Amino acid sequence: MASINEVELETVAQSLNLSKCLTQVEKYLSSYCYEIADTQSLKSAQQSVLILNVKGTAGNYKAMNIESGKLLKNAIQNGNGKLILRIWKGGARWWKLNANEKTRDKRSEDNSIIWNDKCNVCVDESLCDQLAKAEVAGYRVARRTLEFYNSTLNQKTKKWQVSQVCIPQIIYFHDPTKGEQLTENSINNMSMPWAIFSYVGLGSNYFQYKKASNCNDWIICDELVKNMVKVRHEFGFDEPHPRHGRVCVEQALSYALRVLYDIIVPIHTSFFSVHYNLYHQQSHGNGYDCDISDANKKEPTTNNLWIHPLLKQDGLNLSCHINKTKNGLDSEFSDHCRPYKYDDMIDVLRKALSRLKNESVLTPNVYNVSQDQEGHHGANQSNITRMSLLFDILMECVDALVSESKQMNDECALPAVLCHIDLQPQNMILCRQKPKQNDLLSSTSCHSNNDEMSHIFSVLDWEESCYADPRFEILLLCRKVVANRSQADFLWREYTKIMQERFGTNHRVIVGSIEPWLKLENVHSLITLYMQCMDLGGRNPWERKPQVWDKIIRELRRLVDLGWEFCNRAVDS
Image (tube, rainbow, N blue to C red):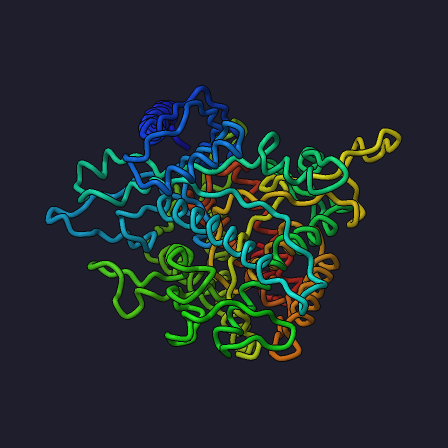
């Protein structure tokens, strides 16, 4: 645990960094004759998020191009004077086992790029920088995709509902790794990445349009977030969620279905359609047409960014591997985006265990999973023994995942899509129709009935956004949002049914079994928790170490329930 002085120093550093970023924001706004009147801080787990109340009159476009000025002006007008400022400080992502990194490494003496093997990233681009770029790309692609979805609906798709989800627009993104030639001094003094977004919340024209488009008024619905439970019985055990909580068991499936219908299906439908159209050069069956005139000039592949109408260049920041070399992007793959697949996550898990094995020393001060009566962490031989046994079990788990992968033949391959991964209520703006005066029930809570469940007006926090197998999105919805196997199976079948109805007539849309994916997520969770126990990774832990070990045991028992009896060795230790 960090000492008080270390914590104070970190707080001071964050304050200085926030001040530096605000100075840059003020400079950007002043170039268009705007200034910040005041700010309001919003809650965020990793980042700093502020509402900016802006005043001034646009009139100076010479600092940047005219289109950028018009974009900013429209955002301020539609936000009724408000903008959102997001400053990235942390880089923990599910895709990287929630590893975090708070400082940029230095360059070598000859100013060449130093590679950080622990993170598998270029030091000019820290995990925080990577997350910021991925999130900005996620917002852009999500907005582009939903606009594409609505614009291409036609007679063949008249039963499909128009998406009413509003994705905030990126007005300006400050990437500190771009621009001037970076030196050791400039890297050390570099500010954190930040971006200005359009404000789409209550009081904005975006929300007013939602109200005007319906005969009844719409109001923000935050009851679902307020009523989230801190302990929920899920997948066989009571599971604590001290930070945000979870949707209660009774409402979990209804909420998950709303997410499926309002967000996932429109986005996945668009990517499926683009994939099949780009491959076959025409619309088939239940699909719909899209403009592929430019695409016909190049090799038809949905990994080619220059012809993908949804990804475009943003796909580089959403891909599994960007194929970087010391000279930059590998020329052979510089215009391609490789999606995350089942095998890629196995590779991430295997490499994590390999690094742990090579870099971790089995010493008494590594496995801090016990506490004395005063709450101080310590270690003893029994802790070392059981953690060593757990490591061996995790190696077996990864080998078992490889066997699972081999049994999932290529016929189960699906088009890659944009994934959000963290579609919890706290990452949404939920709204519902204003209740009637005599409807006392609806005035006190959001309904559990799916037809009356609050609608999703906007999706925020695209930190985990990635170009990946669509089953990753459904998996995390099944594992983190719904509460038990029955609900997860229903949700998995519902997704399968919808996508087969839309594309199955002319294409093999085989989603397959949920079980290999549940096992993958369980092993992912176990390795993340293992790293957290050793203080080698994970977000800043909010559980005490003994609680983490209890969670490890529950995850192992879930794997036993899925048929992996060998995990019992660690459970019984």
